[in-house]
Image 1 (tube, rainbow, N blue to C red):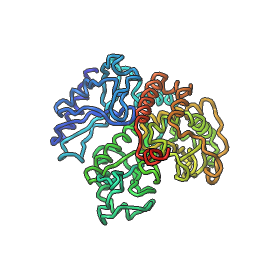
Image 2: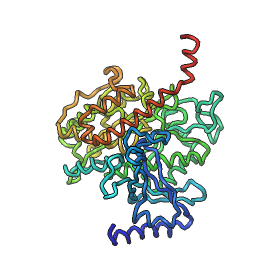
Image 3: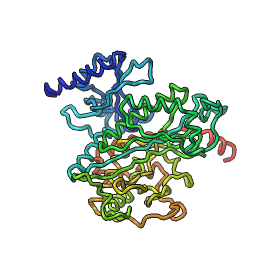
Image 4: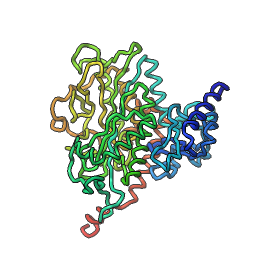
Length: 462
């Protein structure tokens, strides 16, 4: 780092601590393969050194399964010596953590590099950065927004030790109805939502709206669109931490499981994407006023639909992810598209021409945001490069017209991903190998667990 950059780093650290004298500790955060936040906590006096020199973490951070165990099959553990890499601060992510212990904590998001400064191949943020560079070379800038669905659940389990909706802070009653878009339920959880918005503002997160979703205790938080796709995913990672932290402060738990209740709607992550050229024009808005007439939009959709079946392992990364893909619950079951149609996988929302965009509706709330957006953009780039023409858009209910085609098998999803040449080239063959080894090891672990349902069904009857 140059002397000028050293000075800038010291200024960022000192200015922040001068503005927040109550902060005594800084959490240094990095998002792992599953989107789980890992890291270190340091005294605030060491913040300047972090900006100047970074911190060291083992490469095996990206070999961890959901339980935090190193998956040796990735090759990032003991077989390679479990060596360190350097993690660098991400500009603009140093902010106070307002929901913890008298505002004594700050946080800073990091990304991993090789010791020589090259991007570390297994860091999903670095994969997204590389794909964005390819768009930049084409003179295109993705404009993106993410929508995150989540559940609030009671910290107390029910009589069967299962999760349950929280008690309303106002009435004390547990919700049992869907109540989609209910303003009454927003009122009942107003203190929680107000704290979310205040904490997001303190962290510079562009939280737009919070709405009641279609199951008891389910909500959605939307981030404002931005032409900085890396920041959009940084914001998503930090917003998840914020929601979980504020929920605990209010006596709830927040979960981004894709399917926390078997008979209720799952939680997804929807991505809105448009592409702007070097003149600031939205290339999805070309060719007149017909919202589906744009050649660029059609090719982008074509790439998304073609690669969607083989990208399911990235969009649905764990056992619970695949429980979400059930008919009748607004979850895409096939690679379909259409205009202003929520029964399809790729929706072109209604709205003014200049805001024309694609909404990708397949991924669960448990997805790694960087991998989700990297997959979406890689698919769009494939469609534009190969000029792929999609099938006819769906009019009406896609579930009644197209049979389910997207796999709900974790094993098959991993097999499809391992054999897809385009995704291997775009995301990196070495990364795909690490990802698949990590996911296969976690799946093998799940197969060693016998569920209570299996005892109920089979113990006495087979």
